[in-house]
Image (cartoon, rainbow, N blue to C red; front, side):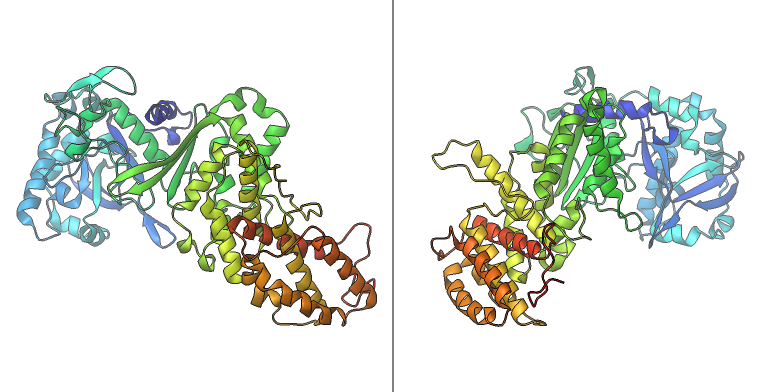
Length: 592
């Protein structure tokens, strides 16, 4: 299913209206080429071109369509008309002159092995003449030579005055397309296309997956007898027969989606997540913006993306062909020399929009003026990490959250998310907006899940975005109680550097019976410092909160600690929210 979808996407992109977005045809791949040997038709070197441009602290090389690279092993095998400096020029950079001599010989031999139709091309003739008359003095005098030599950089050839590389010339491309498969290539029915075709033994590497090997890794591979079918030993690809054309198509499409500047990928924890549609759609690049961290120069990018999707849903734009357009969401994670599929979803855009909308509905909670309405997934993850650092985010958490979002409203978020949010609240004695939103979302999905499961217990009420005076949950009410006791202390002793939250929050949210008896006794002395009217108001509020609390439990389980945090957050926010029918009350109890 995944390979079929990627194959279809590849063929769509091959016919893209924008030439810059077209994917290379079979036999070619997109490759960053840092240096170009620009030569005349007579093979004379004009200059060594450095294609790299500064991008932050790094230099990024220009990308070109070149003949498909070979699967490099311990042996010597050359790419066609592009390779490392050792292969192309035969210059030793690692102290292995004999091996470099063999590499260069292989590079030249592969060019000479092209059919006669390609040998007549002036570009190919220029390359062969270059090898016959290399002027090392001119080459070594080039400004970029020292950097290319030090890095054993990848390079290729271009005729002086041309834009395309010599390996991109029509005669070379035609020779590649007409090249017959090796005589020992087995034929079988392709699992993707269903056609009888030569089978790709080793699939091209997938690059751009965070945490995987820099040289790339594979989705389809077999490297041990335990994974091979009977009679398929030493012929890895034959265990899952995919034709050479389809293997090229799906790997090219996936590498395109995972490229460095891709607008269709996001990094969620250790899961590199890509999005694409069966038919062209503006939402292919919009949806990643919903979950990705917005750039510093455009902090509202994610909010605009969410508004665009919700607006399309409300105006009925997703009710027709656009809404029926199927979207694919693929999460990839590193696994040694391979890539594992963390999750995969395929669903119509209309349904995808509903699930994204439900995600933000689950997160919706009363917030401050400067808190984001639609928090990015990165900010939500960082909020539950130790010291709010990205390096401390649990590696599997982000992918599991995305998986739950696209799986549907009744699928619970990972329990690790609730555990991390509650744990950070307890460790730091602080329940912030993002943590409270995460706790509410996790609890509501658990409640929703349990409501569809047969049970003799009455269904629990889902938590509202704001303070819910009717919620009977004892843990929720104890959180409200703790927030009220803290507010009494703050008003009784203005300017306190620390409140009961800094000392007692962890114990109150986990072992209430050990704390609340002391806190309720201390609040009596605090109330005496307030005006009569203000004291009576707090007494009424305490009575309302404790009206359904029969006793303080010895221990609160994880879910109830989440309810406690939510009750505390709601009550605190309510204290600082001006009521429409009331005048704001100053700490002294007088109208302001």
